[in-house]
View 1 (cartoon, helix red, strand yellow):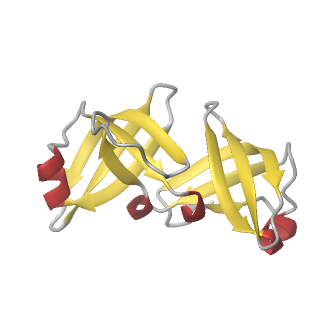
View 2 (cartoon, rainbow, N blue to C red):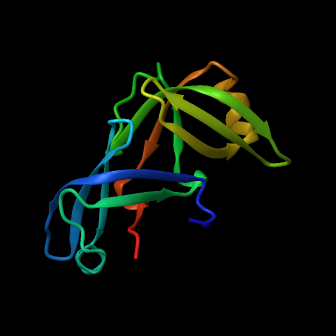
Length: 142
């Protein structure tokens, strides 16, 4: 698949909880992690999402929020992945951060250079990647 979203996470639908307007869809990712998404009921039906169906979750790098692992905060984001920074690629305004979890899930985030400095992000830093359920786009093969 050729799309601009840096995070393309393959998985299988574990559950679909129907709502009046939106459905909650939980994917079991290839590495065993779960990813919760919220998409419209119409989109869920169009994609034919049912347990066992393969799907790809697309998450743009700016939608992956990073927090210090020892922040002492509790977050409302449904998806929280603890991992270590494997690379920091600085740009003029933003930096691209690559993170890998203990189970091997690789995530890419884009944050400001100011945040990199304030959080003292460097290779080996332990961070939590936060992804809101509504920031996930689902795709299936045609």
